[in-house]
Image (cartoon, rainbow, N blue to C red; front, side, top):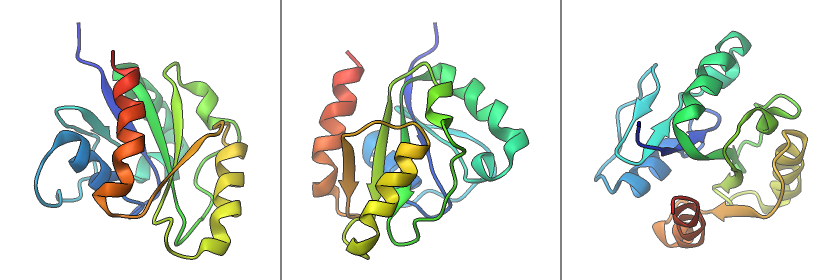
Length: 146
């Protein structure tokens, strides 16, 4: 049986690798790759898998190795990246994460609407880029991995 991990999806530069590093407890930034990266506790999905609809099947297939899925929205950019209802294709629980939540607070509602359209139910988790803001989300994630 394969080890289950946390799958992390989102737009480019939305904080996927940062969150993966916090969960995997690695130091430093990971180099950007064109392929899905399997870490000790994470599955880090490049943005291209979301941006190219014909690659969605690979993303969905990789989610079979996940005990939960994080769908990230970057509050500093807040651009639509997820198709409507996309969260519903996953069997694992899906958590909505709004990254860089300390930037452009007026965009928070747009980010929440984007997650709702994608089928992600509240509560949403707000990450600033500082590891301290990650504690609540990490506790929820670890609860799923029991």
